Image (tube, rainbow, N blue to C red; front, side, top):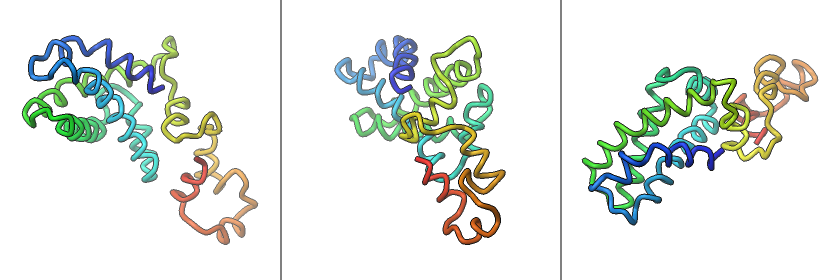
Length: 170
């Protein structure tokens, strides 16, 4: 998934990054990598914090989740500053480039004719589950209290919140 995401960013980097005089040529690859890892970092953060709704909404439709776009833009801006790119350039690039990339990412995720991004693969990739994650795992947690739950008594005795259970999946 990360490779496909970097390819998507690279396909769109010509004008925004590569031909940008404010970004030194020797930093082009680092900026492309910073863009992809910023997206992955925010998605991981949503998953780890239990913001499953935010994670799912990030992929529902183009432009539907301004919060995710803002979070990714802020993360990207910080990474660019760490690379020595000035604040104005970093903010400008983040505000123009990240929304366009997230829109394409979301479009590809929702396109049944495009297999380059699959929601289940994305969640598996960001969770580190290596194929062990199934969307039904989330459904089971919310509907039955967990796939291995023996009922209400076991749920009551099982320590931790739903977030703790989700973290246990990965």
